[in-house]
Length: 245
Image (cartoon, rainbow, N blue to C red; front, side):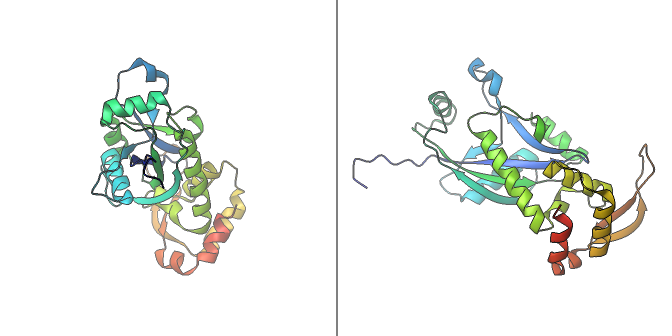
């Protein structure tokens, strides 16, 4: 490059944090830290941050996740780099300058997705942080290109679930077959044949029956299962067949 070419070191991370409430796939959204009415109608955003001089991209993403959820060692995967020079318009750059003290003509961001178990403790924590869990299907308007980052993360999640057992990271430690089926239906936006699904699932050997039943439910209690981690590790082809729906 010539000496007169301006370089840019403004790099950020944006994280799509997925949770599952038993029926719907949800994403954690936060509100922009400003009272400027200019952003009132599009203040919801994905959790994110500018990276620090002394940290790697995964470290920055982990910092964002811990700040958003209070958790460490969350399942985390990089999805894509968003580097369109026009992804951040002038009004957004002005906000970045005012809030972060960074004056730049562009920002490159790296997308990540994370999976958390959406229990009541998690909901309470994020509520105290002023964040909100929203159904993926109900999210239509986010700042900048955060809708693109979300859409990309969901596509990557769908592919990963087909080829690995990460779906169980969204479920409670003890879960019902119905919850697992609901999860897959929510992620892929389709209906699964219940009988065929159960047949393949039980034939795979990846579930261990706990001998326990659901409690405090309005319907007939269902059996609770845990993941047979040994079977999942040794029988990946079976997992693929189950999750290929």
